[in-house]
Image (cartoon, rainbow over all chains, first blue to last red; front, top):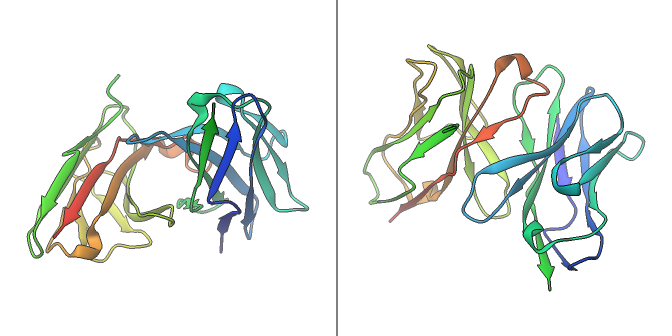
Length: 113
Length: 115
């Protein structure tokens, strides 16, 4: 079975400081991992994805994530937060051989001026 | 580009009423799905379809019905609404060839309240 745990339900940072959103996963097979972002009253948009190529994945808007198999983690980072980054972020896992995605419960990122 | 279009955006129902949430996509995607989003629970899969005439249940299918008569459309039916179905519903699609690695494209959501 696959599962994903987002370790923080809410993260608050100041504009210009680094962002770290933490995600641990459980998967029986080689997983594909994704981060999606949801701005208020909008649908979800793909930020980045890991699909067994390079372990450091770069996404849109300066975000990146590193796949660490030994730690079963896929944390999302950004060097410098911008006000427009305020949103909810979802870590998602998909096992090879399954069509269903499993979503984490989400982390709400607040960016203070 | 329209992408994935959901209607209505907002709906209020009384317990026991029925209604249909509409979803249409113009990307010729084989795979379409419905999720519900509840606070602190992420998104949970209700039903999905891998092509016209093919549907299957997801994690939380009870109380919902779907059909897929065309590639473009994937309506979600609530047969007898209950307060537990108060939620935000998202339709999402992707190309079936990218089933494990492909990007899901989401609609903007339909907020349903059942009184």
